Length: 296
Image (cartoon, rainbow, N blue to C red; front, side, top):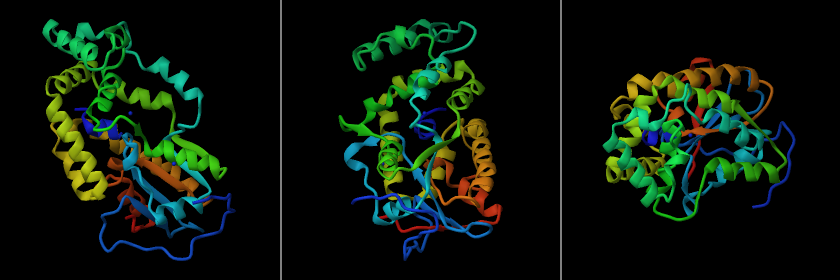
């Protein structure tokens, strides 16, 4: 089960400002329907901010609210799932994109399933099967998502934030290494990944509808419904610990050391925020105060 969920898992004029500054007024939501959260309390000297992202969107749909821009401006550094500003990640990732022990896609599927994938990649994506034959099917699945988009020009929220970081001369950091993220998919059987890739292509219209629905939920910032959509996906419960829970706990463990020292801006997939094992609740459990910031 790697649908939009796993994909949620695969930036005015600015100036560089010193620590200790904060913007004069923060507007909070009356409910929890916000993707932007302020982190304060406990041992924090200046608030930090947590943003739920969507990794691939139509470029024209990416908009940052005034509150988000202010929160970002007064933060000292940007923290992402991995440091996407590190050019060596692209080359290092190549080493971890492929299946171990000589496993190939053709060995994981029957001939009819394989031919259907082959036809889709050839006709719809103009790609040779040689490109994905040895690739972890979860990574191959990510190549299908741009096909589901309703626009030609796509971008990611993280990449837009990185652009702003460079203008403001902020450092960008990652909670995880590219090696760790790639290893996550070694904990999901290659057979299951291959079947998910086949199911995606076999039911591409349904997947496209689900992708658009998830994007709509994201735009509406309804965290409770985003969580419900995740939990309703068949098979998600079996992979939840690997894809979300264990990673969230690891990030909170790191944040306990980072938050007392720096006021930072955290941007990770929106699916990591909600629920009893989401970042918001886990940080609350550690004694921090989290408030939803108005983010229209």
